[in-house]
Image 1 (cartoon, rainbow, N blue to C red):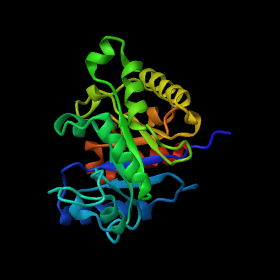
Image 2 (cartoon, helix red, strand yellow):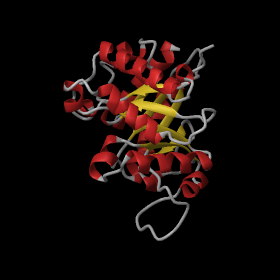
Image 3 (tube, one colour):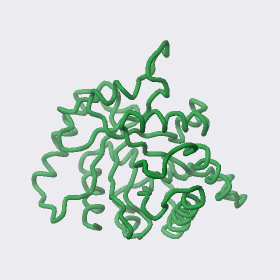
Image 4 (cartoon, rainbow, N blue to C red):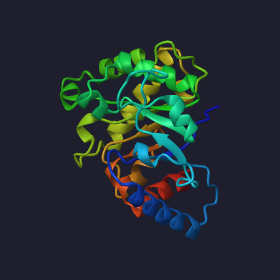
Length: 252
């Protein structure tokens, strides 16, 4: 029996001050209060900047972090630990985002350490994977994603709660969105790879990310293989994020 949860995750990246975040959540909450959901079972997650990680501000959503350090503590200037995040009411953490991989040179092995640290501190990892345009054009997508998943999930129990976010690098922040056909093909591929490395791929929630907006979300969430979204730029507008969330909720 397939049992996958739906998610709508906002990644603010390095945007919004504390005052702006409070204003955003007040507006988002007003949209929630004005709307009646028949099921209300889609998981709402917001990943703001570190200075805004306060459960009192985010009382209508689950709180997520955009990163963690793989160490529990130590002389790691500018870093933040899983224990610190948990104390702030954080439940989710984005790991392996392409911007972390590119700008901070995070390897699959480093990400694997962070996955272990997250799970040992009762944080649910949202593991980002996805190919470059060059990889796609050379028909090397399966090998690329196989390597990402195999290394990033090495030593992880199949019973752990993990979320996969497929973010084709060529679609992140570019305005380009993968077609429904591409998304379906890759999500099926990801489930097969998960099965091959020992996980129950059919019961792992796989989100799509990559220039998601209110204009394409309804079509994408209608696909059987899509369990929600990891949203960047569009999530910075409270109404835009609410509209996408509403599409996900209506699809359940």
